[in-house]
Image (cartoon, rainbow, N blue to C red):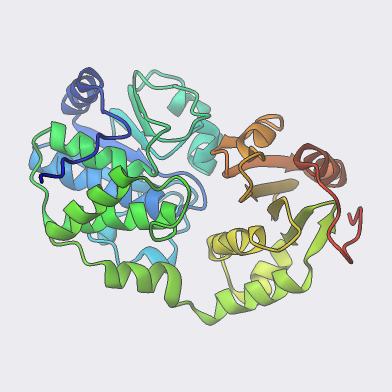
Length: 346
């Protein structure tokens, strides 16, 4: 008996792949700015594109848009070439490629310092998997069914006839593992797993990825989690905590070190959703998570100008609106307060 391979859960549009490559190949230099508080998928996927374009004779530079390069991502092949905005010189670029960025506002200082950079005068290739992506590119390769941007980039590089080298495979596997928490999230499909297997066959090694993303952590991260957990509060069935600039400074930590904490809180018995509020300037950046299929945190975030995925999303909240925001999210997630939890802790 012959077992046939199951059908893919999504297919890359060949016309989109060709159009993206056509724009990128016109460039003298492609700039790949990352979203703020960059995670594994947000950095590894642009690096994979950078490696791939190099094979095609196209110069490309990956830029961390908020200037903060997490130590946990320094294992990625090619990371030594990454530039940090506000720290390293900005290259002279003539095409932008945004990977894993649902909204141009997520480019932090790169965007706010000069909004004209993203007004369309410089061509933009937009590669993403967020359902709330605004399709802001000259070419948009947006596949919400994909579990990560890396999964899309793997298909794109194949369509572009790029050789799947070990450095590219390592970057792509890191992106997939980062966004699926090691192939464990509901977004993980058989397609995701087959892609991951192909990357391992191409030389990717899961061990350093798992160590860097899930096992090893600096003392600053432990300090940050300890502070955050000691201030956990409930508003209805929303479990949340806040991290101030003072806490980050005391722990000598950067905000990205707390990203895994919101997933940890989302698994708390009695919660319908979890949130971490990061103090930024005069307001808060919020990460939202839920494990419940009937709670769409992307829809909730969109009511506050944010977006993301049904189970993972984010938005910005002004300082004076924090309590109102928490109550609104609790109302939208509904459910009864867990035993012993405060019904409205602001």
